[in-house]
Amino acid sequence: MSNTLLSTTRPSTTPPLFEARPFSDRCRAVWDRGDHLLIGVSPGNSYFSHRRITELLLWSRQSFDAVDIVYADLHVDAQFTVCGYPAEHALRRADKEVKATRRRVRRGVEESGRSGVGIHALSEFGTAPAYLRLRRAVQDALETDQLLRDAAESMARSFLAARLPGDGAPSSAQLAAGVAYITAELPFFLDTPSLLGVPSSVSCYHAELPLTPVLFGRDEGLRAVAGQAYAVVRPHLGPQTDAA
Image (cartoon, rainbow, N blue to C red; front, side, top):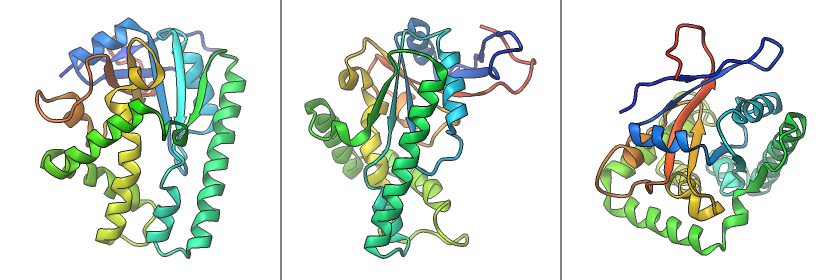
């Protein structure tokens, strides 16, 4: 696993610095190619304010030729339904969150001034052959690969914790809804190049996810293609980092 922390230097008049930690040496090699950065945004995630998106896009100019943003709009209503909302209320709540997310993304892209940034709803890929192939692979693997299943359920529990009252464990129905939500996003962790027609790609998030070591750190089972990388990208925490 790579422990190298990549940092960038900007004048003080620019947005806050970000630092990046590719998950492995292979991920670092994909990062160094600089072909493409994928930013995934989930509804209800306060981290991705329009300002944070603007800053990420400005920062990305230093390392990447192209950037796409994909925001989740599938299975959002199911999250509310299994948490006790009536179906109609769940649909309205999900629609509201997705629209708010889309506005934040568009505003962030506009204020960054970076041209050519792709903005996509996850549902846009629902009939694409590459997406369908990858999603089937995920669904099949979840049935047979316990390590993958455990990681997906761990990620679902973390996601549901923000929506469930108290600190109780999710029910089996709630957990299933959470895994379905994650399953819809996983193709972009496996093979963004096939989905967006780019030579290679780095998927980024501000934390390592339970699925990261499963998809990027093993030699068997379902895992990312050679041209797909993952990196933790977060605001720079201070000057005490190793510059690349």
